Length: 339
Figure 1 (cartoon, rainbow, N blue to C red):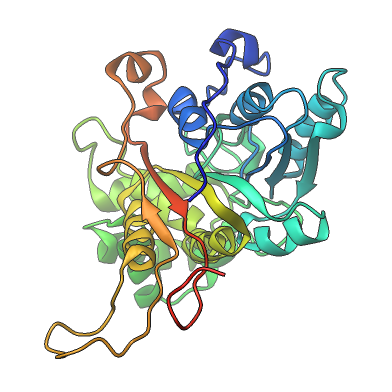
Figure 2 (figure 1 turned 180 degrees about the vertical axis):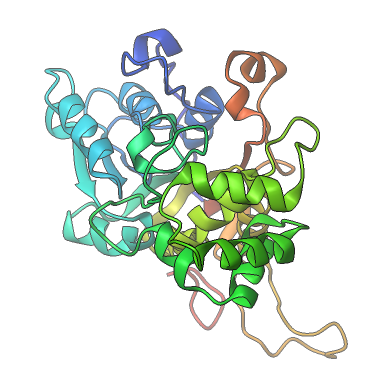
């Protein structure tokens, strides 16, 4: 494996933020240190969001390292284009509207392969959460949309008003781990027979009545809204495809960094890395290995990285973040020898 360059110090957060205090990049210093961007390198930010991580990569990879910044949200890509127009950035930043599930094809089309690093910062940006008309937050009365790309796919209202009761209950349990999923689904089906459920406020009110009051200070609609958002955007499917695309696109010694925000995401990331670092996938009872599995990743560090107490105090939305890091190994032939 190639020796990694010593990471270039990046400017403090205040100097690299996009000027809007609504969005603070989570685990920014840790992510940039893990990626260790170097001059001349090629990096991919799978979720540009507010641009904090991308700015850190560009600063560390100066003067000629480049970043391919993706985001399904057109508003995020508009922000990325503003950043690309800055004199010290220019063509070092290539913004593309697209889902990181397709990162391998996007990087290939942009002539950006192989990559030296991939960052996937999962979940919502504060911009999306704090924009009422996007329909992600139940604290606003807004259309029940929840799509990362408002021009693609079906809004969350379609799921709420069309899915059978059993399918709704399964959705809330599978993606939100909501213990009152059946009661919530039953209440939704009953209410939508009176009139379609089209706003976040009405849905939150239905869920609150069905699930009871707040639990530990958490609004009873929190898990159900999470589940709807994940289903609306096929987030777990996109994550699986994005992880595979990242491994295919990374150069030997390239680094994969993933920041997740709930157990469903982190479980997928952990299992993927464990699978790709395994030297054998045969059942334990097999006398000899016959699977021929060749590891493609090596785990970096002992496991998950979490925000510091100081970061959580400054940005409470970071409290559930988990970061995992892995290195891309060199491909090996049938004889087990790297080409």
